[in-house]
Length: 559
Image 1 (tube, rainbow, N blue to C red):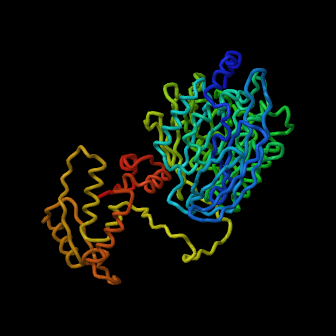
Image 2 (tube, rainbow, N blue to C red):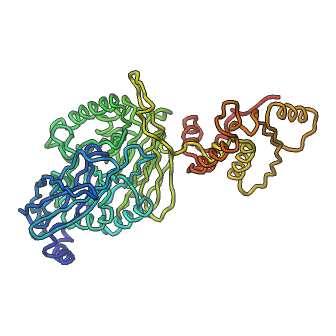
């Protein structure tokens, strides 16, 4: 975004700020960084204010006696960028592979004077969902604002599996005093694996010229699988069946030193998207800049020209962007126009102190907030049926939520063996839906759902019930002859309901107890709050249950 002459005013502050940090701070900021496979690999990175130390990293499963030692990689220490400024600290990292899903590990970072211990737990292989914290631009004048947003997101998602920072982490990529503030204010989240995205402000020098993002690359040892000439600047990683692809959208700042930068990156992106199809991966793209001009004028920028054709061709369901310091969610788009099976673009707002008044709501945005009052954080839940997105102001107010349905492309016949498939004991149905299996439950479910639809309206539900074929026939005859004592009638063909059917292998009373026990384990009481129901309705073009009831003609009947 806009450049500010901050460094000239800050040189007098740098030495004073150093007083907050001990002269021998040594090992600091041991943080988790994503590995190429989020379920079996992990990178642990840390900083040391002394160059030339020889750290030893050892780790083991919690409870084991045998320790393994991992080789520590030395990051390239950035140079001293300005006279009188403090030089960036030395970075180190270890890349751990072959880890076991759902397993807790303990580790030690040891130098000649320090011993720092920590622990991390790898995600489960097939949980109901993975939770991801996504934050837009954190660049700040006061990084305390960024710290408040980090802590708000942590309170909301204390068990987050992953966090993503969408670029412009600091205001100036060479200002080490800013990086120290960013790290210190975000310290509470260092145990959650970080996936950073390169922003344009990471590629500014102290005099606001374009420069290599050396400090960014030194701090964040991301997977080294990017396109030619962009190692550490663009990369991809997997979390279960979801592949995140982080693009470098900073051709304006870095293109002069990288001929054909976007051409090479687009070729790499197409290769990864093809591979993702073959491996049945669902894809989320991470782009600091959006594919359109900033501020929006209707035209594509260079990133749109390079990447939009590939996004459309491979039907990428979701793209996160940043850069404009506002929150926005688009309609599903194809070639920039709304289309039901298109791509949803979400601009992730700001997480730091800096606002941008020039941001505008685009014609295709279904949700928008300028974020002038407070920062925003985004909760992303990766579920089997789709990506669930909720956006919150830092004070906890929900400003947007959406479900982006996802489907894997199956290009070949796959033989599934149920014995080899993981168990999924979590019910997808609501409590009231599961209990349909025994007599009296349908009427009870309808009553509870009506109460949810309109809790302030008193709806008197008078129920007529019948069990077994003869009982149902008698009830129907009574209705036809005008002998009705209710306004809702439930008939079960089998006595006791489905649990009393002809193929039942246990008594119907015992079957009813089993059904109720399973129903009680559901996370959703009625269809009103069941995300699977909401997801199906959205595929039909209805945003809510109320929307479906008022606009759908599915249940209209002509008599």
